[in-house]
Image (tube, rainbow, N blue to C red; front, side, top):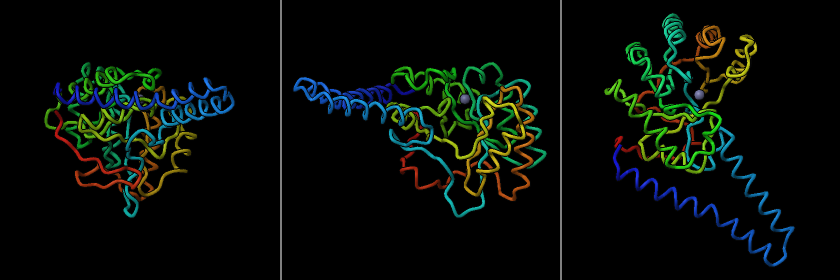
Amino acid sequence: MNAEVRSRCMRRSRARRALSLLPLLIVGLLVWFGQFVAAGALFISVMATVMIGTLVPRCALFGPMIKQLRSGGNCTLLTIDDGPHPQHTPAILDILDEHRLKAVFFLVGERAAKHPYLVREIVARGHEIGNHTQTHPAAMFWSLQAPQLWREISGCQETLMSICPEHPPRFFRPPAGHHNMFTSLIVQALGLRMLIWSARGFDGVAQNVDLITRRIRRRLKADSIVLIHEGTPVAVEVARSVATMMAESGLECSTPPADLSFSDDEMVVERRAAP
Ligand SMILES: [Zn+2]
């Protein structure tokens, strides 16, 4: 990726980190002047705000994100994370074909590099591929600094573009939905848009397919973004159950067209050509 874009992004990340330290400077001054209660209250408030902005997937404190489609239509969006998977991806593609549904597959770069034929098959069947980092460091992603985040996101972008140069990913989804104060800067610098979800069944941890489907059905409506996963013990069963439920809902389910607008939750982001 373009070195100039990267260094501009790193400069902005350093500036953002310096700004974020200002409240701690004030805490230090309050302690200096013996205002311990005020210092403690400010410290706790700042830390709580930062943790909520980082760990709550749908919190847009640190930058724009897409959380649902623009209301008024009859569309939903199905998204499938963590592939490709040598057994699950082919089975899920057949299920989607059976129900005439299209989806966005958020792929992990190193898994895509291992199974490039699956990435090409996803695209050939009319689905879209999205960026889900190069190595999927789910437990640590919230704490990564800007250079590491750049490596994860740009690395995945390069991997997927090397496999399908005609279909560069347009969307990024952070592992576990965690995104710190640097993530959106890097996502925007790479010409991507962060896409979260509005309906999930926690299939990454639960294994009861009926319960997972019921959770998604409760939140499913026009403009929903649905999340399911590959790579779990019940991935194919969940895909079959959720696809059946979505097909029967009467809502349209296709990949986002180039001009599809999203909810007002997302600030307008000018799309740049991928460097
Ligand atoms: Zn994931």
